[in-house]
Image (cartoon, rainbow, N blue to C red; front, side, top):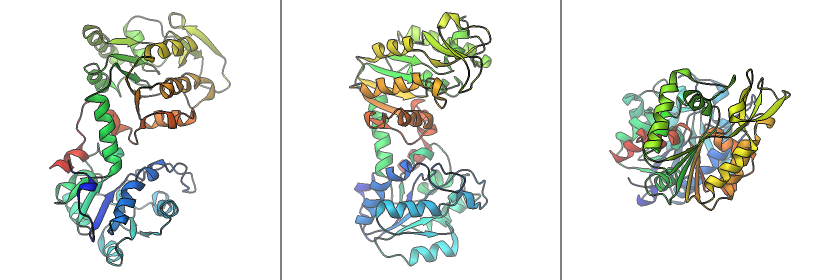
Length: 392
């Protein structure tokens, strides 16, 4: 694969596919600009190379129709402040209006196109929409890791018809860290997997059992394993359709001598509520009518001991209902343990990144991925379509 710094960009029109799908409030104000900031090195590199910088992104899911709630106009304003430079905005991403906006640019200028998903063709493999976008630029750069697992036009179809194309610095960073974890890790390598459902992480767990030395399972997904192994789960969330799958995963880990660790105690309650009464109970004693909503203190101590000598950590998924304070301590403690480790640590998934931020451990994790679904597919051992398209 070619990276952006390997191309001569001077006096060229450079199209950068970014991921500016940032959280916004009801008034359209940006609540977290991390994804915007992560793309700044690529944008600044293109500005310094005296190019016409054409930025493109999606926002939410307007389903091919123009919706002012999902306009990128506020992103252009935030970018202008972050770059200390005007980022012009055009109310379209293709057609005469977009062409005129590009033509009027000077080299070193920056332009943000309107939401790509306002066009019906964006969420398809649409060659005609790709050709329309191609008219605007000379060089294609993908810096949108968060959507590189999608076969969408601007990520997959468009680069395939471009002669000059490369990965941006953010995409390069994502590829580099996941490669270090999955292809050539410092051992022992430990995977920490949480979240609500086994079904969303089946392929990742199967793939990781061929790569890791230890696996920690937390979150509600652990109760599918517990029920499959004949342990009491009370009213805890369980996926009955995946009991056999859980048994297969457990057996595969045993056969490969991969150590799989489950929580030994839980914070339980009768309902998911900030004011609900909670108990801390051993894993064998979850009462009828109660559900496990967080890992307990003994589990945290055990996991810290399990992880004390690891060389690499990959983490995807919280340990409990971390959004509610009384069920957040296990996830916060896991963030502290990972953050305090001397291991190379890579975290993926939106909930995981949010939980780490709430625990004030962001600066202590080696790398936090900008992509949830994309990072999970890498853990599953899949090749991302957006990356494949750059290699054609």
